[in-house]
Image 1 (tube, protein in one colour):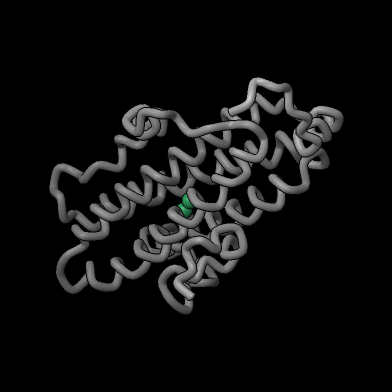
Image 2: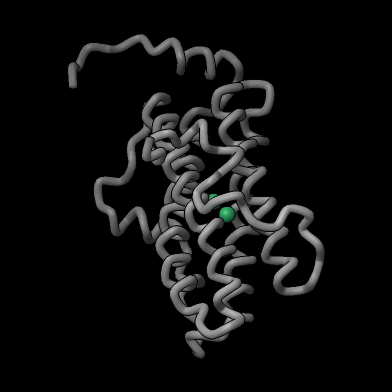
Length: 194
Ligand SMILES: [Fe+2]
Ligand SMILES: [Fe+2]
């Protein structure tokens, strides 16, 4: 890339609006790592939902899993637009997520334990995206639009797992189809097949 100092108006306006761009980038890259790693772990957790009970749970974890992939995809362009990059070392990217708690429970097919892990993951994601919303509210409409849409899906995911674990009604169980991602679809069009 050229050594010349490039004028990036899209970043200048953020600074003028009072955004700490370095802090925002740090949080976005961290959130991207959590989404990416959670997608991986949900894949394995879902595969261990066996038996008659597991069959119905698989679909719910699949909806949440595909939306985590959507969340990862959704924040990528924003990271680069405001001058960030992903870590060069993929292992560093996975490690920074701190998602080891999503490894299989001691009894690998214990559905309740699997659901509890899913719930904690969703609750962590809510905190992560709420943090971004608070950092930029009124200052960065582009990132805010993204963060609030991801937050909306994370809140729905939490409600699904609360319903499955504790019978607390979610009011909106299941998507029309896996990968629907009703709130983040516009941010992750790269995942659309057509
Ligand atoms: Fe997510
Ligand atoms: Fe989620």
